[in-house]
Image (cartoon, rainbow, N blue to C red; front, side, top):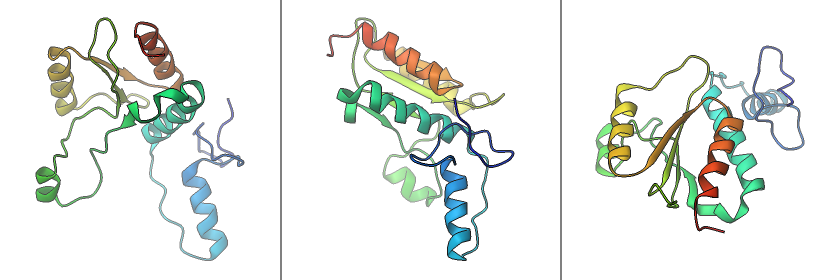
Amino acid sequence: MKTCATPKCKSTALVRGSDLCLQCYSAKLDQEKGTKAKRIMGHEEDDIQAEFFFNAAILFPKLDKLLYHACNEGKRDPKRAKRIGIKSGVADVHLAIANHQYHSLYIEFKAGKNTQTDEQIEFQKQVEAAGNKYVVCYSAAQAIEILKDYLLTTNYR
């Protein structure tokens, strides 16, 4: 699998038609425009998730809107976020399809040695108690395999 051409960047989620990841590609565009390049922060989990969605769209195009990212983080006014239902700890990805054992599938992405937060562990307990499957994945390939296995036990075609 190809990695970003930028030295020290190990991302494998490359922009189509480029040998750079999204963050390095954006920084290169900023530099070419003469604007100040944005600080590139480590978004390894985002890169894994982006690679997962890229591959899932190719392998499972019929899932379309049934497989999605739950936007549960980012800089927002905390009071407004609470009012509109944003919850910390919610898994990164949700597949809204039941199989023969579970109501739906939740995937939490982690990179390196990162582990779940207390809020994520509490979310996992609640969704599993409600009859859902919850997994933590450390690579896009691992998540694709879990998705494949899950879909084999569904009536969704």
